[in-house]
Length: 207
Figure (tube, rainbow, N blue to C red):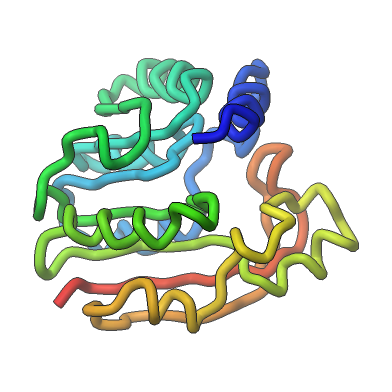
C-alpha cells in the first residue's frame, strides 16, 4: 500500500488524543445489541474504540489495520477496559483469516482506497459465514457538500472513496438487505468526526 497513505494514518493515530474518541459508533452500538455474540471482525479498526466495545459485550474480537500507531492505542484501550482483542497489522489478503470464520463483520468508516475496495469487500464476504451479518456505516458521496461547510466533520474528499446505496447493492451481492439507506446524522466522535454529515448505513445477512 502507498507509503503516503500509511504515513497519513500513523501521523493521525500517533497523537496522544484518540482521533475518533473512545466511545463506540452509535450505529454499531444499536445493531450489536440485537445479535448473539460470536466471532466479529473489524477491518480498518484504527484506535480500537469499536473493537473494545464489542469485546466488552462478550464478542471474540478480531481487527486489522495498516497503522502500527493505531494498533498501539487500540491495545492500550483494550487493556484499560480489561478485555483482549486480536489485532493484526497488514493488508487483508496476508492476514490468514479463514472462509466462514466470522459471525459478523463491522465496516465502520472503513474507506479503503478505490483500487482495492471491491477486492477487499469480496474477500471479506468469504470470511463471513452463511447467515452472518455485515454492519456498515461510511460517508456517502453527497458528504462532500457537508465537508465544504464544515471540515471538522471529516471523511475522504475524493468521490471514489465515498459510497452510494447502489454501490453497496453491487459490492455486497448475495445478502438479504435488512437495512440500507443514505441519511444525515450529527457526528460527535473525537475531534475527527464533528458535525452534520451524510452516511450510508447497511445491515445485511449473508444468504
